[in-house]
Length: 633
Image (cartoon, rainbow, N blue to C red; front, side, top):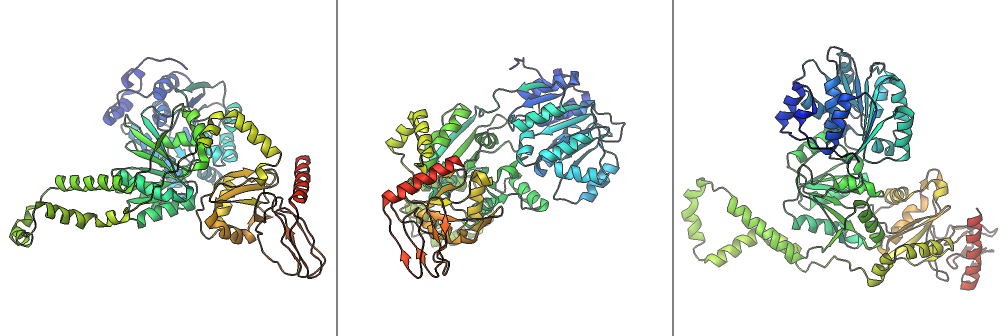
């Protein structure tokens, strides 16, 4: 990484109008990414790849040089800035307008979906030099001949990795193909996956690469905590974390839109100052929620990763991972939303006992230890909340309009001494809280020594686990205590991934938001675990499910020799039997027959008869044969 000396914005060489706007904002010294990018872009016309985390000042890093070079006399698009979400689009546009407020004749237009296209078309036709947009809306405007890119001199791809993660690869190809060959392309990204590399090779010419620190490491002023609980206690733990931090101002990250809405609804019903933001909200709803959050009328914003893109608030005290993301780098993005502008921040993970390896992986990425915290008990929370109430009373400004009522008040309270008066007052305000946490159970999960030893052994255990999986050990293993292990007849061959499976389960089950445990995705089938309480719901709800055109078969998977629950029960007349491991079925010619044998037995019913049983040795032979066939396939 290039070593640079400290400089001020005045020394960088921006024009006086931009410097004046920066001074108004109170900015003196550029951030590391700004200090490396801005001078280079002012002096060169070469392409640039800049790798830096969210919250490092990337908008100014590309925005200030673009503003410096724009020709305000030409009333046509000279720069286009592409970003993944409408929230980020609006944020970039707002920041750019702030930087350009003293540049006369400069116009910036934001174009994004979820809003009427006609005002955007009108703004483009009136003459604009800089367009900030989301890929979908930009293509729509190109197709309508309302946006022409043949005179573009600067293309900025902000959050390039996220745009590709959201499926905008073809859109980016289409847009970039509309731009001239001679232009300056600036690619800003937190990570450099293969698709970002492909875009850089196809559409950039000898780009310079700038990388600020390590793009995967967490910020030094963020504390990383985790709480270990049972999956079913995740929401209870969230409540206690909020209660023990009465001044919390943060974002709660969930995996899916449905979970986001459900967690936010629960928080609001339980009296917390919270709301949700996700992709199903209209732009007006989104703006309303974000407006309340920015003004701190909301303490908690529950969001998905995609919806949170573009949220640029420096004062967040906490980021809470209600679920861990599939990608460790997304955790770094999440945590980077707190601890900004020199402030301290806390990133919290609510983990369950099956996520030990995931926590270790995150530690390796951020190159720091995660601190295990104890979920506070009722007494701890009540003491903190009570002191918060007393502080509020002490700091409350007295309204002297009550003076005329004091004689009557004193007369009613005359029989109470000081101690009794305090008790009555506190009880009036606090009884509900005390009752809620009376005899509150301990939510902390103690990780066993065996589990700790397994994690420390690292590579040896991982190799052993891989051997077990290849030999079929994982496929017949026991579930964690309190969990049921399910077989499902979908795997990587059908393009199933872990997040697809979680979405399928939560889409079809009545309970919704089922805390799915361990997931094993095989080639032709998979296994997943869910709490025992949801066993019936999973089996019955998924009995008629269809995923990507494939009929779903879900059964309880048991160790050899144990009986397995079947998805559909007696189908009547078909005489079908299902195997508990590979999900195979065979029909007999008889009517009304039924097989209910061992977990992976394959039997045929004859007539109205019924077959059961089967030795474990017979099962093992059949299972081994099935495993070998799967390998050959």
